Image (cartoon, rainbow, N blue to C red; front, side, top):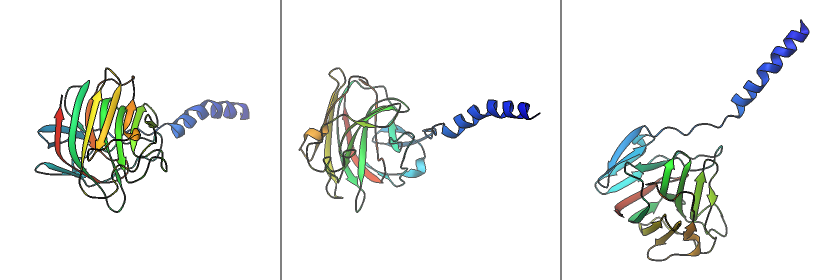
Length: 211
């Protein structure tokens, strides 16, 4: 009798362990908002406020781990882009904060993004740069050269140029670029675009996308 009990427990243990260690799923982008002349897929429309040509992300959804990558962003309902120039104005939260501009999104967990924050990348290497997600935690794909991208909570003009054939992306803030804002990736050469934040609220306005 004791032998049967031991064998049953042994057979059940792997399933229990797998259930305990399974990675949590990303919440589905099941709702929509309309802004900048496009439909955008989001986790919850209530997290966003649209007024004219301005969009405010009013609710943060930090993704701490398993995997550690951003999930709170609006994703354009459009065809994948292999090449584009994006111009917009952005505003981080107070007193500190950051925001992201997503590009080359192909499916859940497979995308790149530009991260702009009030931290210098040399001091916080996971801030202010170009990052890559490929099914797991985000990784940096740009150098750590340069100052903070958005040092204050005022509105800032940003520009992002992406060329999937060359695997290159470069960003500018108020007309200035740095080594930290230049990245290369040949695994995600096209995809959808978006905007949001890893940990904070943020503002976006005057979005212009040239294909």
